[in-house]
Image (cartoon, rainbow, N blue to C red):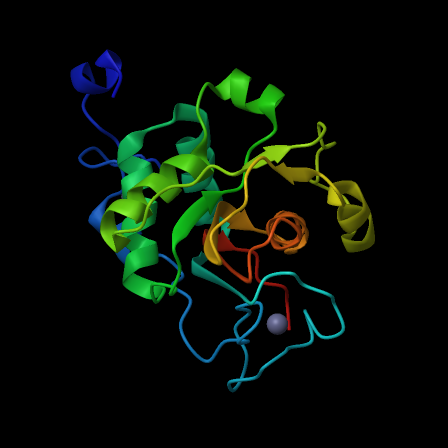
Length: 222
Ligand SMILES: [Zn+2]
Ligand SMILES: [Zn+2]
């Protein structure tokens, strides 16, 4: 925690109300993701399915992807504040949301998706790693930062799905052999391309099963 956070009265990062970093009303109003979901990619569906329209036919290296909340405008504001200010309390808040809504995967370690080094340096911290650390505390699972960026990846924002996939292909490498089952952790699941590329690197390095967990997930219009 920075000194300035101790000196200033806290304001809700979503609605700016004085009090807590996420006020009770905003916390309660989060668009929580609940069943039925696509078993594979975690998209909300009308009934439980093994694969949905969003992920059918895609080769995905992860066994499942789950998120706590939908990435709507409020959550976008929250995630932006979390990433820009690096507040540990927000990482803790995100982890608590995940623990509330996502079943603990049966795995040996949590692997954060590494952020682009240049962008991390600007922000000076790393949201996915902070989330993985907090989840590790709650789930009693060790943190294993096994993934590294093979090369800087151009920004994914604004790219079409096919471009995103091309963009991240081969983007990650592992230094060591991962345990058989790992949980990949990231802040936001957008199209799944980044998580799939990271899972693919872990599988190539010997992981048998990779489950992905994120705080938020983009929900495409159905
Ligand atoms: Zn609020
Ligand atoms: Zn799906």
